[in-house]
Image (cartoon, rainbow, N blue to C red; front, side, top):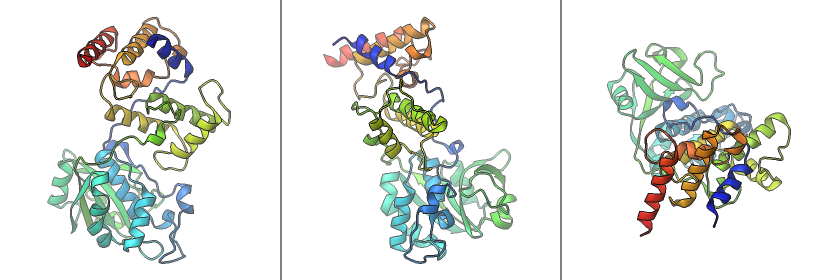
Amino acid sequence: MNYKKTITLLLSAMTLTVSTPALSANAADGIIYDQHDAKWSEVKFDKYSTTASTMELSGCGIFSFCNAIYALNGTIADAYEVADWAVNIGGYRPGAGGTYRYPFYQQVEEAFGERYGFRVDGYYTGAVTDEVLIDHLKNGGVAVVNVPWHFMTITGYNEENETYHVLECAVDMPKRGLEADSWATAETMSTGRTEVGWYVLLSDTGTSDRTIPASLDLNCDGMVNSIDASLITARYSEILNDTPLSNYGMTDDIRNTIDTCADIDHNGTVTQRDADILLRWINEMNAAGDVNCDSIIDGRDATAILTYYAFSSADNSAAETTGLESGINLLGDFNSDGIIDARDASDVLTHYAQSSV
């Protein structure tokens, strides 16, 4: 096979650059679920009440849990699935009090702990200044906290200025006065509608199922890689501008697949953030050098790196270097010298030759 020709065709097939850097899974990522997204006004559970039974009106406990898991280890918990489970065990009663914290947290680890990679380290009646809470945050844990008539998430503690990183899943409550992603003082978190009176501690176990869903192989080439992220970006551009793109490898089948499968952050629509999250997953779940993400570091990867290096060295237009470009930027520095160049391609070939013997 003429690998150079194959990779060049792949690179030329996509003409949209994904320039946004991959996200890292930490508190700075902020919320993954906003309960006031229009989508949640249509999601109802009528087991306990037909009034105020939508997740938009009563889902703060569910969304705060899911935001906590994402901040903890980058795993996106399915809010609908968690809510449906919680309704059935009496831990979530929409329209009749919302999330019932003890039934929920007494059973949620058994139901989802291994899959989402967390454990429950205890729940406490207490204040945000409790030493056990602060120590937990300083050691990398997160907490879901209960304030009057509401749940929120705390994902970090800054010892220098004694502030807490707070994720608010419902930002339209003026009396709480927090943004979706805020650093708040102990005074703020001990007063009025933001006074913490109860909290549960969650820790990462490293067991989460963080494989990239096969459904994100949007072009059905057998690999989930940066070409799929580029397709998400292209689709977002189409939606944003209400203009079909005919030159980016888009087909109606791919559009339908993206619309069905690529709302990774579950906010109700496909956006650039979904592409960014996929790029982060690609970066975290694939080995350096495997730029096409086929689980084999071989001549194909070396050819892609070398082609990219040749194009970028010649200062060619983005149209000649896109497609796998983001994947090469993420995974192409095989020798970890901070530069993606012919040396990486050579080292990949050497690795391939040695592993093939």
